[in-house]
Image (cartoon, rainbow, N blue to C red; front, side, top):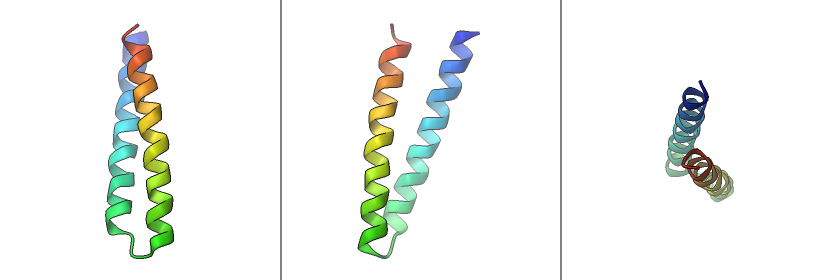
Length: 56
C-alpha cells in the first residue's frame, strides 16, 4: 500500500510542477512570473526529496 501512496504523491507534485510552469510562461507581469518561479523552486525541492525517500 505504501507504494501507491508514494506514486500518488509524486504524480500530484509532478502535475503541480507542470501547472506552475504553465503559469510562469503565461504570466504577463514580472511579479506574477517571479512568484511562479518561487513555487517552481519549492516544488522541485519537494519532488527531489520525494524521489529520494521513495528509493530508500
